[in-house]
Length: 123
Image (cartoon, rainbow, N blue to C red):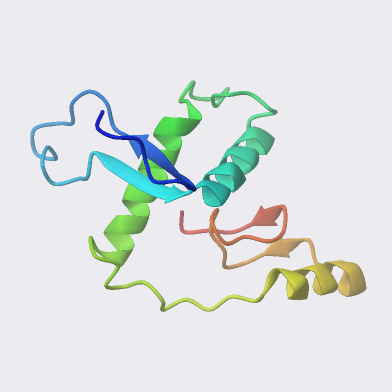
């Protein structure tokens, strides 16, 4: 398991084995800021009716989160080479859009950067 994650970070670590063709090609662990982990846990809970695992699949939050982070790495590269190409509005702008115009859905967001309760995402 190794040493604990740095302060302010949460670790998601894959346990068990991967299929042979993937072993050694995917990271076994990801560390993200705890505020992001908390947001993902809250969104997961909302989508699962407050349960700790998906009622449709029985898959726990930690496994879903590891898979999400692996998809991010596949898109951005192992050293974040592809990061920074997206654009986003600040949460205050989304709050104003929701209040002034009734906007309730984001069309291009991700679980890590969404501001509204509903969004479309490649993830």
